[in-house]
Image (cartoon, rainbow, N blue to C red; front, side, top):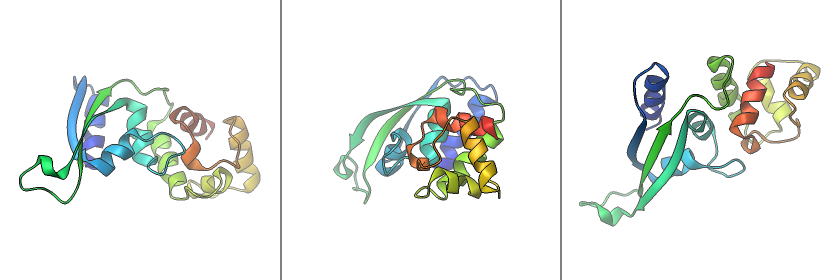
Length: 154
């Protein structure tokens, strides 16, 4: 499901007139899309999609709503696409930073940043200071806006 969702976002960014999309997904994917910072479900998918779309969980469906009943639960989600919020200078850097630090989601931000680019600890500290972020925080606690500040500081 993630590649399809990212393709929709890319198509919107390329100028295709997609105001919104309503999609049925496996519930765990829907939960990850709508997840808030600090939750177990919050991750790369949450940050990247919430950066370009408002995510609304419309309906949770039990397996019994379908015949034959699947072995997974489903959810209906609405994505309302918008310009990247907040804007980022380089979308590729933003995506790469989000992906890199979530490979070390349980590490401190200062240590997780080293997954993006091998840096001296002092350089990582300078980047975090420029982004106004505490290096002791964990990546899973950052908001979309804080990820944008981190990408801008790089």
